[in-house]
Amino acid sequence: MVEKSSGNKGEKTAISRRRITLGILLGSLAGAFGSLLALLKVLSPEKKGGGYEATIVLGDRLVYAQGEKAGTPLRAAALKDGDAVLAYPVGKAQNQANLIQLIRLKEKAFKPPTRLDLTDQGFVAYSAICTHLGCTVSWVKNQTSPDTSFTECFCHNSIFDPTRGAKVLGGPAPIPLAQVGVKVAEDGVLLFTSGFIGPIGPQV
Image (cartoon, rainbow, N blue to C red):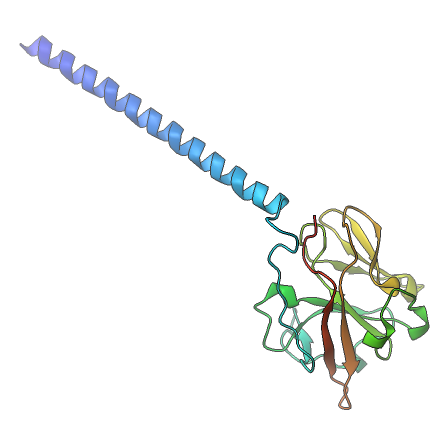
């Protein structure tokens, strides 16, 4: 009687172990599958633009997007030739699609297809969302020749020329960054004069 009871307990223990092992294995496979789906969604957006919808409207003030001045108005005097900053329209920082890169260069540096009617006093602005996979672009300043500075996405090294409508100079980005209109108001604060001219977000 005792031996039979011990045998039953051993069988139950073995079955329990198998169930636990199977549960762990199935859980691991489910987690790996979920991670793979998430990765595929990032690498292959469901639609061009990746769902980015900007809410910039004419007259919105530009404010700093980061740093100690985040949320404070951007003034023309703060940027010299060759400088650039990331900015949002005031009150709309929660929407990543509104993020722009504001750049100041000499007016004579701009060439087609840059929309000169969307620039003012050397200021030009483009979407800061790379058209490859949606990373935020960075400014690479040439200290000796500011007008030859460029915008680069360090995720996959796409390079854009701000003097020629953010034309793609290299890397996997399929199209330029979309330009958006800006102007300097009488009090020196920068304002938006249009929405984006062209698509924003990933275009692959």
